[in-house]
Amino acid sequence: MEKPRYSSVTVLTGSGISAESGVPTFRGEDGLWRHYHAEELATPQAFARDAALVWEWYDWRRGLIAACEPNAAHRTLVEMERECEEFFLITQNVDGLHRRAGSERMVELHGNIWQVRCTAEGSVFVNEEVPLPQIPPRCSCGAPLRPHVVWFGESLDHSSMQAAHAAAEICDLMLVIGTSAVVHPAASLPAIAKQHGAYLVEVNLERTPLSPYADEVLLGSAAQVLPELWDRLRPACQGVS
Ligand code: OAD
View 1 (cartoon, rainbow, N blue to C red):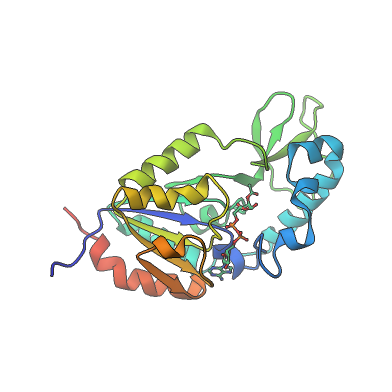
View 2: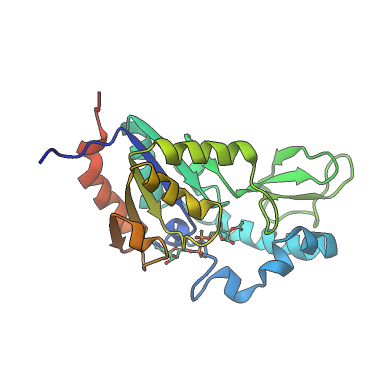
């Protein structure tokens, strides 16, 4: 039988890929949503009600993330980007660790915790101050800034979603790493890839709603499994002409 070759690789990541860096996930035993109510912190209504409370939570998370480093899984994706003919990374993570590791061909579907947006003008800035000197932080125009992240009930950035959709449609290999695969529209991307004929590999500590549709489910930690998986897949992804 002919060995498979993959000319286009798309990767979807979730918070599980950053877990070994020390960033908490959302669901599960120690997940953020176990300890905090999403609707009190990650909705536009919560921000309108109490911007300081929302910002205190983000300030705490920014401090925690600032102390974390990318792990072997993030670094493996950088290698893949360098060596695969076509590569695209779609992350749901706002922690910025993929970019810190060196990933470039990517979209951050849910935004980035290191960016802030003016609530009056809509302009977006990088802000890496930890801790924030003023809560809520303010724009030079005087209006409060908000985190440039997608909250519950908000739409995803249209062009990011389009890029993610296109990458899911064209890939012939999709890796889905460290996501519970329950938050849409990100969770629908693997199904799109599969419908278009991609080989689907899931890497997670446990099975998810996606597992029954995956061609391979690799149970284990991303930082351990991904370098091993890349060793195996590398010959099939390199030098496709
Ligand atoms: P979840 O917390 O829902 O899921 C994390 C997944 O990672 C679970 O399936 C875990 O089993 C898995 N996991 C944990 N540690 C792992 C490890 N070391 N290696 C591999 N897998 C591991 O997080 P997400 O799927 O990212 O959205 O959540 C999706 C979205 O829900 C987030 O982007 C956020 C949240 O509400 C917004 O804030 C808009």
